[in-house]
Image 1 (tube, one colour):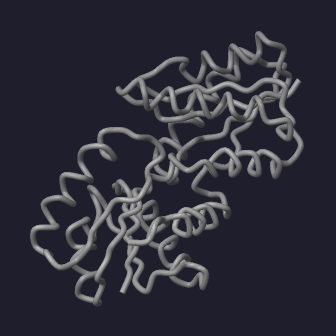
Image 2 (image 1 turned 90 degrees about the horizontal axis):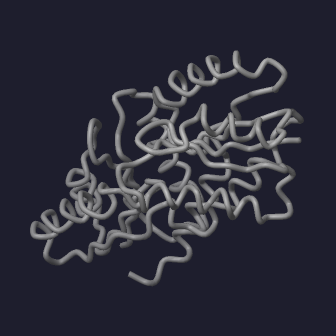
Length: 124
Length: 124
């Protein structure tokens, strides 16, 4: 079974973390997403942590897990912190394929999303 | 003339800030964006700052400026810091209409973008 783990930074504001969990739920309800297991996890300041999120996916039967970093920029969290946590957690799950997908900001669709947001603005 | 100011957090990594500036450039080159002036600005750790970005738009002839917070979550930067800076900067430009648009994460298109990113993943 395939799993997607949406990994966000995590915030002191519970509302902010709830937005990420809600987004993971929306993905879960979307029939076009070909993944049986979808969860959110947080790098810092909120739970589940990344190892907890990975463990949950494994517990539910995931054989391959793709982490999607919900980050806009290729900062140190994306290029260093998340890979380090994943490398460490992989040792616990030798039979599960674990990989990190592109981070959100890397998507070529980001410009398109902004264009559509600007189009939807009411007249200034 | 209408201006869009794409406002990101700002990072210690110049590459990360350059990604935001490049995105603003892509928007500028997109004929479907109905704004004559488009710039990027940073809340912290990089330049131009938000007041500098607003000043640049005014200098180039903007009569209305829409700030688009390039933030995923409605954290304190979006709900407190950016509005406070904008309120202060507005006093310098009484004849310019200045408003804050929705932040990126608020877009209903975000789920769609993630769905398309997941679809584009190579097989695990």
